[in-house]
Length: 107
Length: 119
Image 1 (cartoon, rainbow over the protein chains, first blue to last red):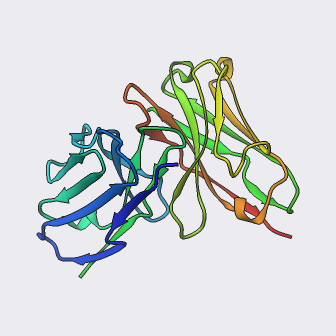
Image 2 (spheres, rainbow over the protein chains, first blue to last red):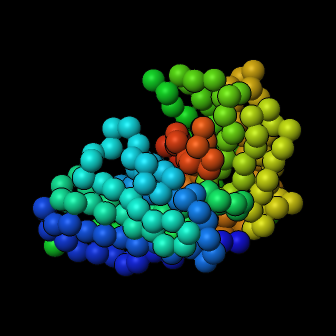
C-alpha cells in the first residue's frame, strides 16, 4: 500500500496568513493526488484534484502543486471559513490512501 | 439537488451484522463507480471498498476483506454495504462516495452514518 504522510499534523495561523501543507507519498504517484477539506461533523469536500486542478466553486486562494512523491497545498490568504482539517489522498492505486490530516486552527 | 443519503447505522454487538444503504438522488447512480470510506471517532479517513458502475467488479481493503460485501441496485439508485463479523475497530462513520471522470477523485459524499460496535 502507498503511505501518505502529511505535515504538519496541526497548524495555528491568523486571518490573512499564507499557509502551506505538505504531503509525501511512499512511492511515485505521478499527479494522482487530491486534497480535501473537512469541517467538524461534516463530510469532506474535494478542493483540488490531479495535484493542481482547482475544483469548481473553490476559492482561488487555494492552490496545489507537485508530482511524483512531494505535493503541497497552499492557502494564500486565510479566511475564517478555511479553518478545518485538510487531507491529501492518492488515487494512483488501490487501496486509495489518505494522509493523516492537518488541523488548521485559528491563532 | 445531487446528493447521497446513507442509512442503516447503529449499535451492534461484536460478531454481529449490519447493512448500510446509500440512496442517490439528483443523478443516476449507474453512471458512477461507488465507494465506502470510513472515519473512526477523532481519526482520519480510510477507504473501505469500491464497486464499478454495474456491480460486476468489487475491491476491498484488507481489513474488511471476507467480512464486508459491497453491492448496488442501479434500478433503485442505491448502494449497499453488508457488514458481518463486526469488530470494535469497525466503529466509525461510514460515508458512501462517488467518483466521476477523474480516477479516484471522491466527488460526491453522503452525510455519513455512524456504526458502533460494542457490547
